[in-house]
Amino acid sequence: MKNKLILFALLNIVVLSCKKEDTKPQDGPKPFQVVTAEVKDLTGYIDYPATIQGIVNNDVRPKIQGYITKVLVDEGQIVQQGQPLFRLETNVLSENADAAKSGVSAAQANISAAQAAVQAAQVEVDKLKPLVQKNIISPIQLQTAQANMSKAQAQLAQSKAAYQQAIASYKGIKANVDYSIIRAPISGVVGKLPLKVGSLVGPSDQIPLTTISNTSSVYAYFSLNEKDYLNFLETMKGSTVPEKIKNLPLVNLELANGSLYDGKGKIETVSGQIDASTGTIQFRAGFGNPQKLLSNGNSGTIKLPIHYDQVVVIPESATYEQQGIVYAYKVGADNKVKNEMITVKDRVDNMVIVTSGIVKGDKIVATGISALKPDTQIIPKPINFDSLVQSIKPVF
Image (cartoon, rainbow, N blue to C red; front, side):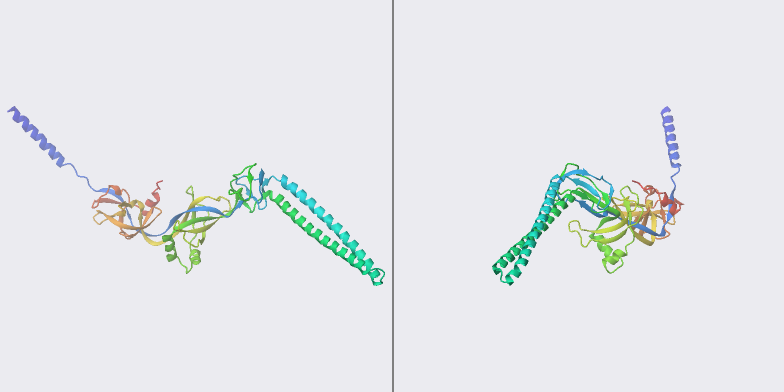
């Protein structure tokens, strides 16, 4: 009897617990932020890695061989055309120049002596001519005097030629002395100075003494692959490549630290052929550089703008991707969500440009989509489209 009572009590406990479980409330629909797909005019950007160079970059090389005795500038210094940069050892050159100058003086003295000999021979000829005419002396004497004058004139001509040769030799040696002072070929900024005082340098050296860069304006070089280049030719207005380039919009330059350079650039030209080794073609954009913020050798990113007129957009946070396909949750009339496959044309400022799958006016779950499954019923909580997009912070 006691065992029966215990069994009956246990059965009552089990029944009561089952009733409690049956009466436990089920989870209902949860609230989710919802936005309406809109139509907007947007400007997106295509990014291309770029390298920066001054409009003119001149390698500085010596015209003669010698040891550097003085370095007259420092790296990064702004110099003017013709300003001395380096000085080379000139002891031997100076001695040669002095010897050549002495040679010029000697040649000039020889000219003076030859001119005197010509004058003396002329006097002798002039003296003998009337005597021959009067048959006082033999014509042979006059012919001898005339031959002596011709000889003196030839010596004078040789002396003048030797003088010209001495002058040319002196000028050449003097030019080499002048070349011992290496000057800036252009106005600009001094680059690296790899060679110091005491280094032996010459015209055939592979390493230049330095590079002078004119960075009053700079060029940004970037490349397009063959596919993008063909798309550019097909879509850009103009019948020729120069006309198409002329119709390109101004571009921005993003610096290596992520900031935008204060000033837009203009794409000016494109190289004439595709590089067979890389399959790319090079473009050049020009930028002003009045404050000298850009240097030769800088890197950056060219941002080429693309304008989209009246396109359907949804927030970036409303999309997710599976196996390369992009989806968004569209809210139906019964507040049930459906994962809609969409076609994305571009992503701009935390917004996705949609070309299929979503149309203007569709309600889209904006946030928290990782907690959703298809056919889940939600409680829509409308949120302002622009406020949501602006509140999204980039993740680095």
